[in-house]
Length: 444
Image 1 (cartoon, one colour):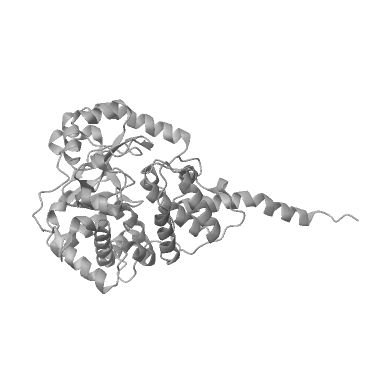
Image 2 (cartoon, one colour):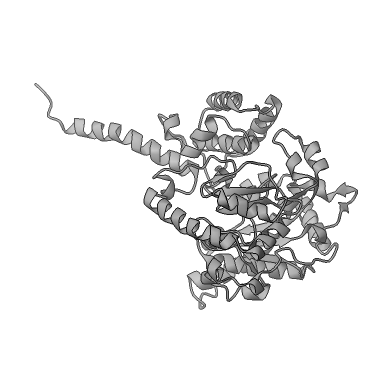
């Protein structure tokens, strides 16, 4: 986003925030959904402090008066979100977590693709006996679907379901994605190739709308219902399933939302309504020997065919602004930052010795360094599989407060694309110079 675009979008949403968030019914809807969740305000580009919670409905407008433009929250439910810390280990997080909602974040370049996938997922969930599904517009070009914690069994074969985040939600996501994919491809083909395409399938277009597993991760935040979206200035409104087909972006105009339009994002689920779905997904994972859903994604996901590249004369100046900021050290989100660094470095063909040197030097710059054993285990796990690209340039980097885009960022989708372009540009003069020299007359 260039400076003019940024200035326009920031001015547009700031003209709305006080008028929109001052409405008691909007505050009530956001506050009600925040119970037992970690929340975080966003100040147009940067996020606020974490962890945080709302104590009163009025807290929402107080943050708006300080510059907040949107509000985000966790899919995990906590006894006391303020006890969260990046230094908690898995056991401590499990003790603090009381459950998790199953959130499906559907996003695409085209709202019609997202609409089709949302409809196919709803049909599939209905088939498994899940009738109560929360649906809301993401605020941009997608939808959020939610199956509440209440719908899941508390234990499966003696294992506490609350302790199985993010593994079981990731398995659920992969299971659903695989099962609906044939119908998803068929329906999207009708858009891309026309209704008459009976025997041809557009497999590439469907890849534009496959949910990303990294979004189902510890302490991941998503946009709260009825929060505004910075890029579009639209509201993340809650929808009924039957309204998805007719939904248009203008329906999310924050100035046209009436009190009667406001609905709960969390439906009134039946207890254990999602038990059948979970059992089928776990059986499917066992049959397909999927023990680590993240690793499985590297084989079957969007970047299955991605091949490691090797760049010459690679320098830190060629890294995107988010990576440069991470390399200066971070406070919150160190594990997510490490995930991004390892996958970026491997994707651009960085030498193993150089990679480890950079990672360990980065860790020493963090406010509270990660334990060396954790970094070692992540490196070893990474080396056992083929390289995958780091997360795309979206909310992942905003979530760790390191997204500070420059002019090139608006033209790329992933940090790897940024590095490749910068590397090419910086090596270009040298290549051109060689060609020019060949054409110079030879002195005699």
